[in-house]
Amino acid sequence: MKEFKGAYMGKILRVDLTKKASRTEDLKGEDLKLLLGGRGLGAKIYYDEIGPDVDPFDERNKVIFMTGPLTGVRLPSTTKFQLATKSPETGRYLCSNCGGDFGPQLKRAGYDGLIVEGSSDDWTSIIIKDGDVSFIDASSWKGFNSDITLQRLKDSIGDARAGCMSIGPAAERLVRISFINVDNRAFGRGGAGGVLGAKRLKGIAVKGSGRVPVADPERVNQIWKEAVKDLRTSRANHTKYGTPQYIEAINEFGCMPTRNFQTTFFERIEGVDAHTMKKRYYVKNFHCFNCPVGCGMVCEVKEGPFAGARARTEYETVALLGPNCGVDDFGAIVAGNQLCDEMGIDTMSGGNLVGLTMELFERGLITKEHTDGIEAKFGSGEAMVGLLRLIAERRGIGDLLAEGARGVMKKHPEWAPYIMAVKGLPYAAYDPRGFYGNALTYGTSSRGACHNVGGWTIRAELQSGDYDRWALEGKGKLVKQIQDNRAYVDSLGICTVVRGSMDFRDHPASDVMEAVTGYGFTPDLMNIGTRIYNLERLILSREGVKRKDDQLPPRTVNEKVPSGPSKGKFLTREMYNLMLDEYYEERGWDSDGVPKEETVKRLKLHTLLS
Ligand code: SF4
Image 1 (spheres, rainbow, N blue to C red):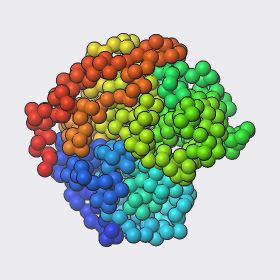
Image 2: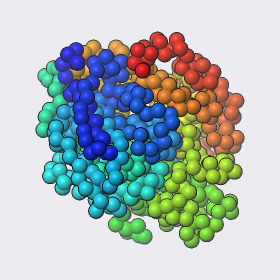
Image 3: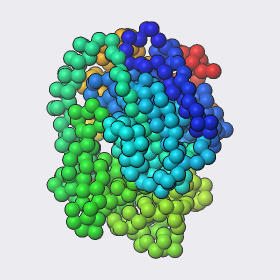
Image 4: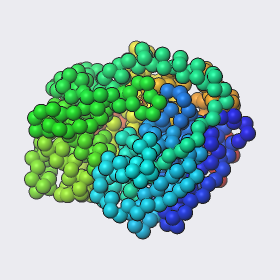
């Protein structure tokens, strides 16, 4: 580790819930040079320790939390840390990225990562105060919502500035779309909350009194000032409207998931767009640790049936609880969002499953008997909120939906035409028939149909003017590039929203990494991203993923868009496979989507893996 003069604390904390014991392990400098930390190192530990035969709820499953070299450093939005585990929702490798205070506090306590293994006989919580690790009895916390649990954790550690993570009642019931609440941010997708639920771990609190060292404090301070100045203008819209700023634009492009992705344009968008949010519901901005942008929009409902509801709304939540359920009442979305946060379920998978249920109901494939009396029609805010509650409480059809899209598909393969998921993870809030690169994003993301890990092509395909959004050629290369960039940014420990301010682009040229670590990472960052993405694909290959698993659901490749600006557009399976061939070629994978031996060697992955 002597090659690094800052950034890393040099240790990982390993906590065994079965033995109620903990120990520390040293980080290896060679691993960091090749994988940076965060998502990269999390994937390596997963590869080494979680085999393909381990069930997500098995006590042999582990939850790996890894910070990056920039986590906790005094630079903008150095809030992020990463999770790796076997996903209850997909049954495969899951990587997830989250903000909050937890990651920075973990580093201040002296650790770059935390691995939770084993399982407790009784409900417990972990308290980490610098080098001191203890377990508290959390049996009386069972049933507490995730917000109340966060407060209990802060009380237990005795410091309001502690970083805390918790699960809600849904995870206690092993709902497979459960999230982990981290300081009111979330490890949202993939159901990682359920893994903690299976381990009977209600929460973790951490507080450190140390500092994250940097190689060149003066230069780091200068970079901080320059980046903050840049963000005031470059991210002004994020500060003003948050991610809901995209609602109107995505609808106008004809890419908005509407009524379970039956069409791509929502005709009553003004009820849920960012202007309505700002005018009638906005209360204040929410900032993650060290973030000058504050893109979180805290909203409150002041009147009507959902009066009193309060939640922090994001684009994906608004689109999937709103237009995807035919709902044009922003108040209902806030209420659904709050319910998901408190019960501890992912709004994105939740919105997809509610949309699916509404379509099944309208087609007469299920009735009020299944929905606990709810008239589950598109457009009803009450029905949307009611169905979310059924999932979180596993009541009626909610018990089946709580098994996630994969579980629903297993039980009802005849519903496949209406289930919008890849590898068991439901779609994010964009319809790929409106921009074809997004189809590859969903098909080849390391964790299922994800817009973040899979590569957010909106800027390139819809905004830059550099690409024909309905072209096939060139999309394989584009998606690979965005995925690799995201893989290294996720491993740094910063938020993707601010990466441009520190020049973490496809051709990074700044000296941030050198100023922080004292090591010349910068020219190699994209290669590191490529290496991480291939490592994840090796894990998925070991878990049985092949070309057939990279395919999209029937609706996307069988049905023409029936209305709106993308009316008449379609994507066939053949068209999609042409893009997939180009993508595999760019990646150096064989025609079945497995990394070739020469690719593994070129990326030095053979030296890393046992
Ligand atoms: S830009 Fe938004 S998500 Fe990113 S760190 Fe800031 S508040 Fe958090």
